[in-house]
Length: 59
Image (cartoon, rainbow, N blue to C red):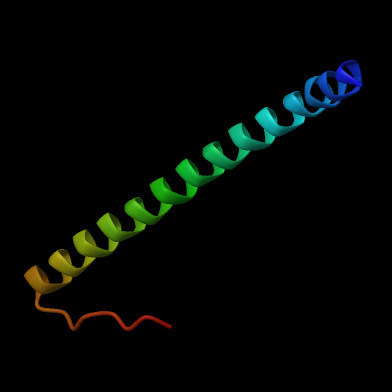
């Protein structure tokens, strides 16, 4: 019976590890995208204010 559970663990471990790595990479990509969009919007707002243009509206 012990061999059965060790086989189950060893067969599921690669799938779980790859799934966890995929989740971490996707989370990092989404976080980077969100941060980049905030920085771009802040820069755009500063430029529009400097030029005396009205702020943009978010659709």
